[in-house]
Length: 64
Image (cartoon, rainbow, N blue to C red):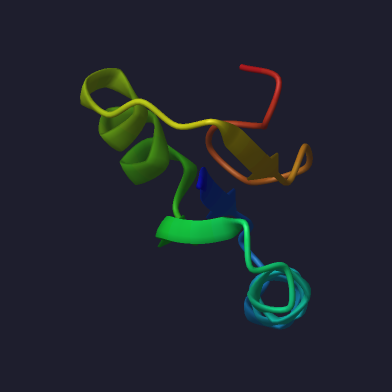
């Protein structure tokens, strides 16, 4: 199983990505975040296989 995390500050984008991932039975979404700081904290102590990340977010962008 591919463990995924989705990070995006736009609710519609989160929903779209989750909809596509739900159609792939080899994936499971273990967390979703609209706040990049919360996602960063989560990723410090949790391992994931695949990260869907918005690059243009307030406070902390996807590249940081």
